[in-house]
Length: 67
Image (cartoon, rainbow, N blue to C red):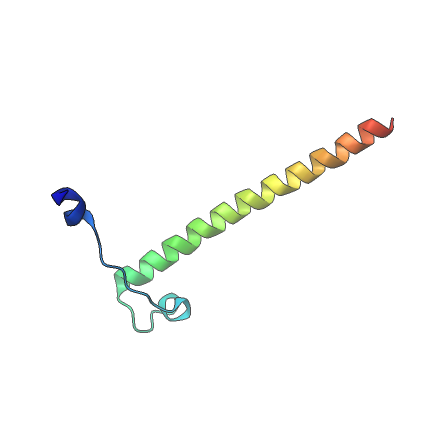
């Protein structure tokens, strides 16, 4: 239980626009925001690619059913 308490961290809410432009945040927070945005971008691209692949698969399945 002490390890859990020791590992807990305080969270601070900061406006995204301010954090991106380093307004009112320290360098560590700015880097964290950029890292999180990069992670979100990567996950979005992967999700988008899968959605396109699934849509293409559904379209090709429909063409197969017609013939």
